Image (cartoon, rainbow, N blue to C red; front, side, top):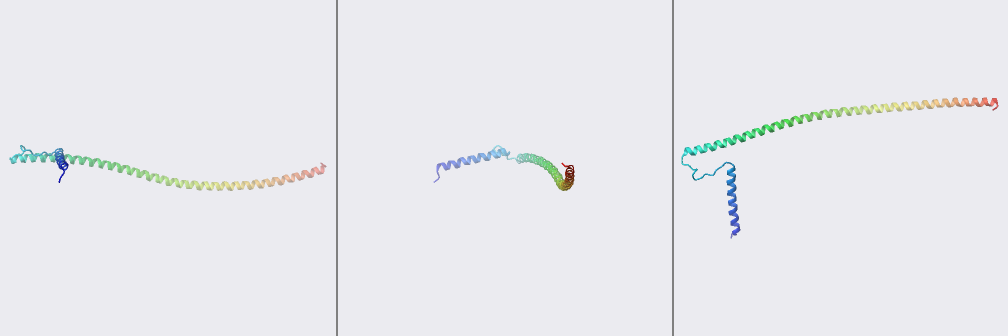
Length: 158
């Protein structure tokens, strides 16, 4: 047995659905036929259909125009984004080329640095050897002079 609340819910839902359908039809440009709108005259009926078709055609034309405008706008945006992408790719290629050049320069500079360091190390070793040899010569000469001085002092009795 159906509850009285269920029956009321169905009636309210049915009325709501009817109002929603009427609202949708009204916003879409549909008009329900009224008793006075029905005309037995085929010419008047044909004129109404022609007028309604003209309205539909005008709406279709407006929609097509809006669609074409949006397509043109999207096409323009795509072209702009393509140009930006091309520019970004060109910049990326330029930066990659610069990076490669800089890496080569770093390798060259490191090689030059290592070579110069080796040259300086060799010069330092040579200078140390020359200093040691010169110091040995001077020490030998100093020892000889001191020996002569000692000999001279011995001869002089000092």
